[in-house]
Image 1 (tube, one colour):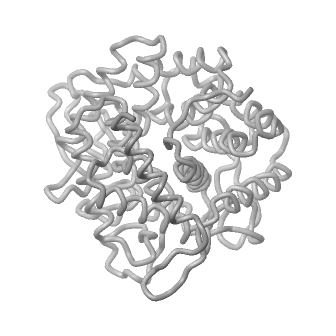
Image 2 (cartoon, one colour):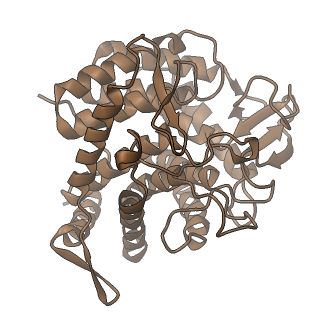
Length: 414
């Protein structure tokens, strides 16, 4: 048994202990977390959501306002367009029901124009890798691979070698000093598209771009305590940092919850793709400051520095992103105590989301209480599709680990 297998075995055993019978928490007995029940709930909710989507070849669910049952739909150009088809691929992965494969394929193909359209912004990874990427992982459809590779080349057109990062918003955005070069923390997630393409038939330079972006972001996007700015503006000609701002958070000096979640998830993924220990060390550091400041129920307030805490909004989407990231990060963590902490916290986040944040009969999304862009008054206390996507992803990762497997697998159904 090699080192990696031993780590997976230890983690699998720990999760099996947590999943059998009842778990002890303090002096109280708590019912074990039933991951299959939560995935079955996700299947049922999404089946009901499908009934509400117009069959017009373009409508993709994005959000549901609080106290509403009506989805707001977007088309393929919206940055969130890949989350719904990605969620459907995950439901296929869980259920092995070809109904979900057919639906996932249908909504995935809505996004095909992105591969050959000039880049509207950096979100091509969210859009295409979540949809076509998961589709290719599960089916090995060669058309999917072709589109992924084309899209990676499109994303690469936003890379500025003078700065060393990908331009996030190639247009006028408030406080971004256009036409200077801006990069936002969300962009870390889109690097996975470049890494994958570089290893699966794409230009090897895509790998170098992704590493450069992660390195420059690590150097400029974080304060001494490892909390992150949402956005950094650079001089497009010299690469010099002009300023750090928090576009969607409470203030330029605050820790916006979802921004920090992108950092945790992003640097965990970058370590997976590079095996460079500096990225693993950094993933631990950006995770530590997040975990240490969480409320007891493990669901963050939308911004950790909002002065009216606890009388403010939560963000279920950030919790779902971090839960998924912690499961993966635990497998790279040699310190057994720290690995157990990550697993325990991830399970606690999933349990809290499942017990107290599920939409159930309120609407056909999976989760309630996400916060999109509070300073702009947008998507306040909504069900939002990316919360659902990362919730299902985290549940699948947890299930695989509980069964003694690695959280990330590549295989094709028979």
